[in-house]
Length: 313
Image (cartoon, rainbow, N blue to C red; front, side, top):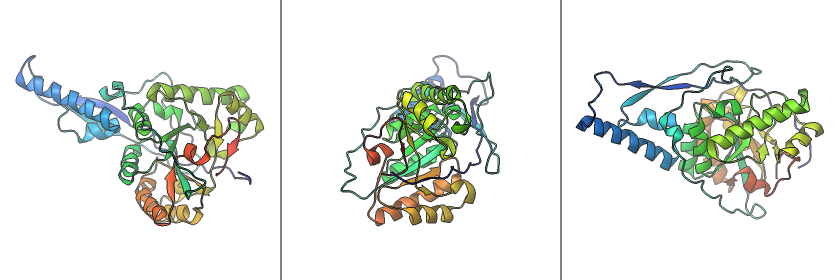
């Protein structure tokens, strides 16, 4: 747990996608008609299935032929290394799909892993949820791997079903602030607002309250740690930086993850980049081949203390 860590490089961010229903063309079915009953049943069944399997709303709505609606998705992104996170404009509310109101399946209990015996390593993903998170969740489920997600509060309201899917999939969810500022440059009250607002958003989305917080840029000091301690949060940093935000390369991200892999390591990635999501299956396969057990940060650290910082086990 010793040593120093430089600030996390800022990643380029995609704006939260805007999701809305567009009715199919043609006259609406008459009440009580066979078509109307089939459409209603199709939507109900699709929503229920999405809640059961914990898939993101964008994923199930886009793929489902049963729903009598289509999803329109638009997304813009910025480039560069130090852009602030895109958050919803003041006074606006995210458009919510029907599935967002369906309770997620109960969270899968995390398996007990003895990292004193096992060769444990943790994959962590920052800055989501975002447009590629649902694909990443599918890759992790296929590999039967649990990871840790540090969420931007400003994005949580746009993707609440993905937050629920993360929890339902057995993944750990942590706080990554509301708008990704450098906390050491803020007043203590401003730090508290960034933290508390995100805690509330995550709780509203998924019914849990995180106990882990990753300070943006890895910037933390005793004063910030004191605020985190007041909110019952431990600061989780990393000791393997893939720099996926900068290289945007499947091969380089994979190489850096594997080169830094050590028992007890915490690997930093960002699920807002498609190249990162594409790299994950190969990273997992290679780590497993080396004998690693992939775990969540809580499994790796055991019982981290609020107000303390951790770079690795």
